[in-house]
Length: 243
Image (cartoon, rainbow, N blue to C red):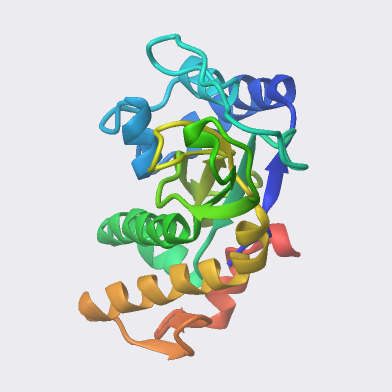
């Protein structure tokens, strides 16, 4: 597994990151096209079957829907309103990356495990609402579970240093739709930080299940493992970035 949850707080810096750095990095290392994921992306009308363009990505970060309509966030802004998105880097063990260079089926496993991890995040997705707002009245603030997220996935086969390194960048956009009113709210991020370790363990467990179904044997636990037969020497040889 890779680094922890990273907030994206500036639309300007995010745009620069995507257009300058990601364009080159993704073009060289993508193992599958970028895609929008999540029920929230469907609700926004984003194309789920096409690669994400830099312009489309930046529009969503800046709260603009594909129709070029502004996505108005309802209610009083939470303390995390400046966070436009949250980046998870989902990465399996080094042996997975090495075997994936010979077995293309593992590329599909990486995407599937990422999708299942996002589905679990959606079950936890929360917004803050004020009871009675639907009826034009005031009321007590409370947490509401929405069941939807807007996310982008960027899969890769190598690290920035050029090592064999299968992984996916999962960007969770900081908004969610209230299922009761259809209004959009800023995402409450406490659940993401609280559960980030559990999400990464789920990702690893889903990969392990998929590998066993393909006939691979693993050494270790369900959340920390290596594929049997890939020696430590070979793993170290392909881990220049960690040296």
